Length: 114
Image (cartoon, rainbow, N blue to C red):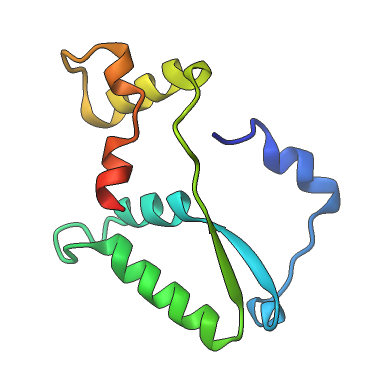
């Protein structure tokens, strides 16, 4: 669902580390972020059939070779509180459709990608 202004909240305690410093550690990965991020890489659109799988493969391979344990985190169904935000995002990405608001609040595209 996301936290408004999360990066501003975390700013005072953030630490920059090198990727190699994660060796031997366990980290949580927002799977939806990795998958959706790959769908928007313009260089891969039209050249890579399933960019999310390509990116997942290389990221997971690299991190596991570095002895990083990954825990993948996924959200459940979005709360009704977020219905308007999801509806606006859908309209921005795909244009207006004849679907009702309740039909637009699901994550059918994300689920089909997974």
